[in-house]
Length: 91
Image 1: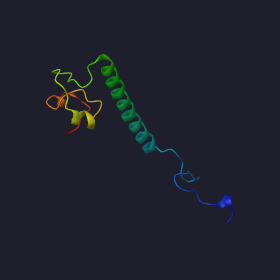
Image 2: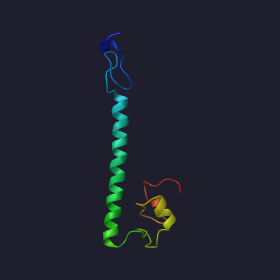
Image 3: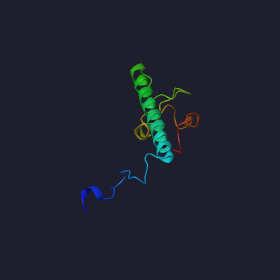
Image 4: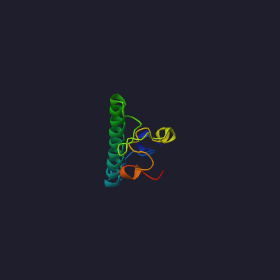
């Protein structure tokens, strides 16, 4: 078998497999949106660090627990008020 006749390997698109598909585009857009959101959260956390407010709850100004910040370094709210953060999941 000649290398020109070899079947595509992995995700390589062959003549019967046009790429990317709508599914691929939607998946990639979802990943991009999530990464942009995470980047914005990190940038906001860095701004709070520079302002001296990192680790303080935006709702009540109480200190956010160290264990919570270790798990979620960009946390904006203490555990009592974390439901105010639209990006937070279950604790």
